[in-house]
Length: 600
Image 1 (cartoon, rainbow, N blue to C red):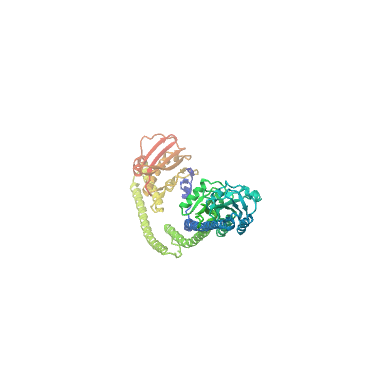
Image 2 (tube, one colour):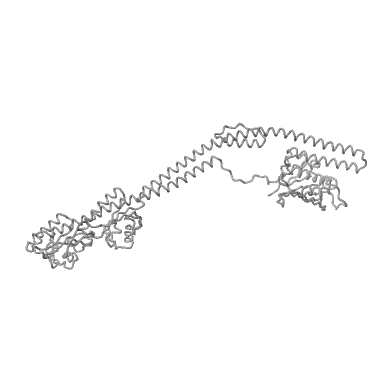
């Protein structure tokens, strides 16, 4: 901390003394205290926003869970309908073949080939999704087909022929490269078939052939497309897949359809079965879906091929309504929080204005000023505080009047006492003759005057506490004569108790008297520097004051110590609970004094 140093010249008053106080009393850096309006607005705004966030999280979590359950139920229901449709459709195709196999034209070994071909054509016209229907002799050679192609071809090694000789056979979906060429289908339009076969027995029960039909897989795609349209009408972006027993996707997105079975699909199906047919899981195409799986069970005589119908809906799109709900809750919740903060700002303003008035009234009360007019508080507690302040103001005014009367009476009596003591000393010493007696009388009167000066300073401060600079200025005032500044004071503001102030005033007076007689103040060029500082001590704060004379006559160690020196070194040291040291340096007297500061 940089301390200000300024000389004191003649005519300087107490206002000039204020300039010697250090910058320790400068404004301290403090964080601004927020207003009640701001605090309430922020608190309600933050609480509203926090409540909105918590409520949004709880509501959206519950809504997401319920919506996922609802979506899974819808997907499972639709997948179940499609599974039954597939089973019923395959049952119808199986029954078609069984009915044809029982037709008399095919059972009669002697029936014309044209009649047999006509029967096969009737079946294909009845259900156009049969790619071809053929009659195979017991040795595996094609006798007739509904399209007139591939007649005479050897199919004795085909599974549908071998299995169809023993009973009704339905094979899983497979590609038909040979038949696609025979039907002249484009290369980019794959032909996938389901084989259905049944034995043809003659009137005698003997095997006369096998009826085989290749069902175009397009029929299942049409079924899936119909159900997908129904599903997407309620759940945009939902998909339906058909998966074979080994996990191959028979119908589905291009990125998955026809792919070899992998562990991801198998794990998905197993997980869905463990969770009552529905689950939220990641698919191998990179998406996360609400997935429902229903296995085909067959229908009546059709035992089924182990297909699984999978209905899935991407989670982000499935929960889009929850996302919208979350967004709306956040928007409206934030608006409500903002409105609450604004309302709190307005209400707090109505509440804070009377409180500010009460604070101003309390401050005026502390400054011993009349209470200002108070606006009526809105709450009962505020009215109670206002009434208490009014009563306290009246009581303090009454006590202040009584105190001032007592202080004025005490000051008057102390001044009278000091005047009486001075008069008695003057009368008692009047008869004394000689230079020593006159000097003693002057010294005694000067000490009384210094004590009275300190008394006046304390009286101005109502004997509560006094500034060190004011005490020093009062004591040195009689010694500031001459055109040039004689004193330079340096130090921070220090409040002294009355006891410490009186003791220090006597010490400064003795130093001034000695300097005026023998030291720096005995010449026209001599100056005195008085500096002080405050440091932490063992019993609290300690004051360190240094008196330093310069520019006076040469100084030598005196032969004896006078009353003033003894007063400073012994009596005042004990009075101040400190220590003093007087050094007679060649440049001038130096006095270092320390005192323990007691609370003022």
